[in-house]
Image (tube, rainbow, N blue to C red; front, top):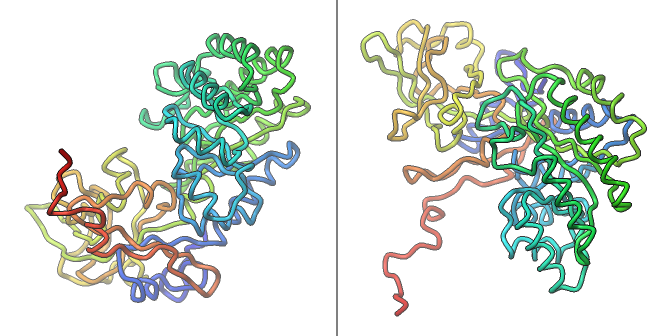
Length: 428
């Protein structure tokens, strides 16, 4: 699952003690394992090897340049949802022809930027968006390769906030609307139908929703290809679940066993876009205990990491395993400031009752200064962090065997006010 293991009584990232990283760069800090990231990418690719899939990493999960460079070196493609993500992928050294541009709200400047850099495809989610792409492409006297994002109305059985394949969500086009829009593409001079795309949600832990989605995509693709010889690719999305508690996600071979027979011999290029699956368990959040206090029977472990660093627990009610970095603490022989351990709320210093990393969680006795490790924080951790309460964002660290490097410096207080002024120059 990952390369964060106990060695000689201390949690390590690969061969580096997490305590050494904390002493060197401070806390809070996100720590990523190169071995875990590369290993997950290779296992995913190998599970579907028969299909020779084009694996496009979903950049929204974690856009750190070092992460993007590692995946580019492994041969990954990239799925992006903004001009900024295109910029990041290019800055990391990847080729624009390996980028698919998704998202339901592409602005004109973003479309121009993508076409100027010759991304592989722009996946269309509405009639109005297709009109705008056609208009921009005409002005540039070129033909834009587009895909149609299909909303297959499939329930992925996941959290409502990360469910994107049901009819009531904002994403994609229903199947009949897709057919009609494909018909208009045949009449246009500056767009060409290159692919179909569906992404039904995230943290999906069973193959059945994918089977239903792929079946509908293939049926639609075969029909549309009669009128569109240019239709060569099908993107079945991502969203494959990972382990947060430790046992909820099937191995990739189970998904492959269900999907490969459906896609075998389809005649389409098969594209996939895992994000969380690759980086989720490849990262942890290190935080140091600041205080331990009691209120009645309630124990609060107050840390220097907060909801602005990792918002998933507050936003989704998400579960992250949390454990002390030192074995002596995990075994219950820690300090006595907080009493004898037991249930605790693990919280941060942000001025919100919703600021917590875990509630009512079993935790051994800990005291101020102890290090805690928040597991499975590699996806939607730093990328969703903020400066709320004027808190500088955390450092990011990449580990490779027995060495580590800071791949994003901790923000300074000067960074918090960069671009601001207390003395504005008024424009009449």
